Image (cartoon, rainbow, N blue to C red):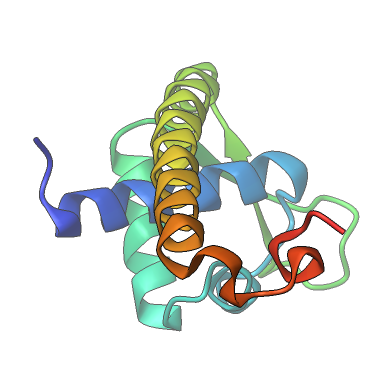
Length: 122
């Protein structure tokens, strides 16, 4: 089983790859803000993705700011994104099922103490 840190890193990679797939022209700062990580973490993540061959970097040809880059997913990056999406979805569905079970147990515990509409039945 993966550690909590591994799962967090995997989720960051998933979110960055998903974001870049839709918005390759985002800056490192914009990526960091959208994913909820520091600018340094975003830079580190992007470099790691590039070293693994999942993302390639290209200049905007038509841009006035020649320092602006586009982060483009490679075919390998697209495959990785698909695999991470499947794992993320599986993990979130398991969390959802666990929450449903916990809610059902709490409803049973509380019983009739709460009005029916508060439990989504009214």
